[in-house]
Length: 369
Image (cartoon, rainbow, N blue to C red; front, side):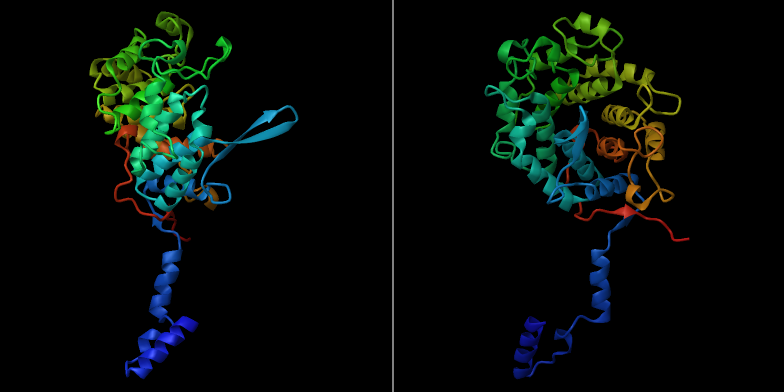
């Protein structure tokens, strides 16, 4: 008010009309009020992104947390991976960039905590996912929170006894029974490198060959990577999630033959409803959709199933836009939505970019009765 009055006084002294320099008009006030109200949407992906943005926690509303029981206590931890997935879903939907930017800055500030530095080597799975986030958010891949992501993931290849082409996922000194190496960690590292203009020629032929060697005879990929691929195929489940990640990595790296064989397995794993997973669930369905879309297959039925799990106008206002893991909204919905959002937008991981995205976090449009 003081500032407005000072401007008006100067204008009067100069003989200028001051009607437009007073308090905002009723029309202007209504526009300001409208700008503060959440944007509304009927788009499934945008509604999911808005839900994710509104459920970020912390002092600056910039990350997600999870919990697990420990004796009589419940331990709360920062879920960096879920936060990264949510950013990608916001970017894929083309909305919620104010929230996505905050979350990206949080990941940058905590990059070493998420990446699990051990004996000078970071974990390739988290680094690969951070590379996808950095690419989508137009961040500096060579200084993401002070870490060169490209160099970090490349240093894990063949590190500490890993096979040629294998990105070493295990911290130094990890007992065999706690082996964290998986198809997903290998695929994410490859996908991050393949999607990055700053890593020309990567992933290299050895890394691609290593992942292809894990593929089972039926085309699917096992959950874990063992010393002998044949052992893994006979003892580990071939699942949609691992295969979905592997397909996206193989296609991004140009390994079309292996990817095509895996696509065949995925299509055979689809339920009549269009869903994927055992039992059918949103996360597995989302990963299958992303893989199939990248391979240019029709996913209308699967998209319809996934959208049918989204909480609509009949649900609680705070839950609208969330995607239930299976049938009903519960504590797993946040994790399910963080991955499902990008699939609802029809964007494989390698195709996600925030280009032309808006800052506002929309809410599902519901007509008043």
